[in-house]
Length: 466
Image (tube, rainbow, N blue to C red; front, side):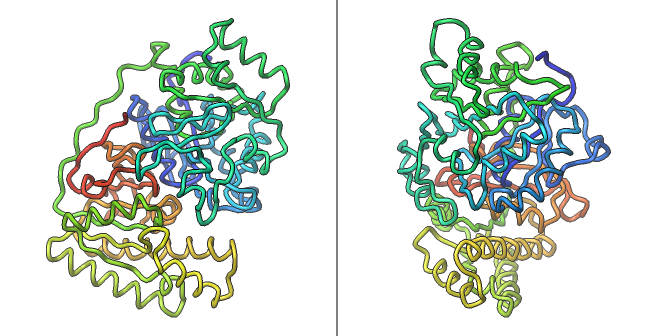
C-alpha cells in the first residue's frame, strides 16, 4: 500500500507498559504517537496535530476470555473507525498469556470478527529488546544476567504467578487459546535468496493458515517483514496484526527503507529533577535489583503491606500511613520508592495470598483480585502524594500495576518526551485535572530497564536501544 499523510497505524495494548513500548518505537522513528487510556473520539484526537499513530493502553492481559468478549469489540471497532490501514493488537514480547487469562488467541478471534483480514500476521520477535523467534520458538534476553534463554527456560516467565510460560513454540502455546490454523514464515524463508519474499509468503499462504507467525533474529530482517505486512494493508480494509513492538519496529524500518520517513528523531535529555516518587507492584527479580540500587543511591525505602491493602478493613489505615511517610520524606528533600513486593521470594506474597483466601478468594480469582486491588490502592496512595507534594516526575514499575495506576491518577493520554530505558520511555501526561496535566511519568514492565533504572529516571539519564 502507498504511504499516506493521515494515520498510519492504530494499536491496542494489552497492558500499559507494553503500550508505551509501542509508542516509543514509533516516536523514536519520527511518527508522532498519542497513547490514550480509552479509544478517543475524532473530536478528542483533533486536539493534537500531525499525529501518525494512535494507541489505547488497555488491560486485557489481566482479562478472562469472557471479559475480552465484553470489552474488546467496542474498543477495536472505535479504533478501526479512525481509518488507519493497520491495526495492531499489542502483546508483551514474552507472549504472557493463557487460555484462562490474557488469552491472545481469544483477542485474535475477536479482532478477526471485526477486521476480517486475509490472514493475521503475528510478529513477536524484537531484537532491540532481546527477543528472538527462530523456527517458531521464542527466546528472550534475561534482565538479570543478560543471557539469552528459550522462553520456557527463562525463570521469571516459567514461574510467572499468573501466566507461566511452559512452552517456547509460540504456535503450540497459541493453539491452546484459538482454533485458528497457524502457519510459519521461518528464518530460512526470510533469508532465502530464491525468489522474492512476496512469492515465499504466497507459498506459506498456500496452506490457508489463518495466522502466520514470522520468525525474526536480526534487526536487519525487520524491514522485510514490515514490507510484507504493509503490502497486505489498505485504508479501505485495515489489516489486523498481532504481536509485540516488533510490529512497530518492522513497519518503521520498511517505511524508512522506502524513503517515507526521515532519520530517526533525536530527543533532548529531560534533565535531572530534585526528587522522584516511585511506586512498584512488580515481583520481578529485575525490579528487585533496581529497587536495591535506588536505595543504595539515597532513595528512601517505603515498604507497603499488601495484605492490609487488599483487606477492606485495613486498606485505609495502611494507605494513610504510607502517604504520611512519603510526605515526611519528600519534605526532607528525599526521593521515595514505595513497593508491595521485592522479588519472587518476598514473604509478603504468601501473607497476601493467605489474607485473600480468608476473604473468600482462591486460585486464579485470588491472583487477579489481589493484583487489581493492590494496584488501585497503590494508585490512590500515589495520587494523594501528587496532590499534596510539589513533585513533577514519577516512575511506576509493573505491567498490570501501571494500567490501574494510570487510571487512578486521571491520565487521559501520554506522549513520549525522552527515552528512559528501552521499552519504557519518559512521558508527558495529558489530563483534565490540572494537578496531573504535564506530569512527567515513566511506566515500566517488571523485566525492563537496567540496574540503575530509578536513579537514571531521577537524573534524566537517557538510555537508547542497542
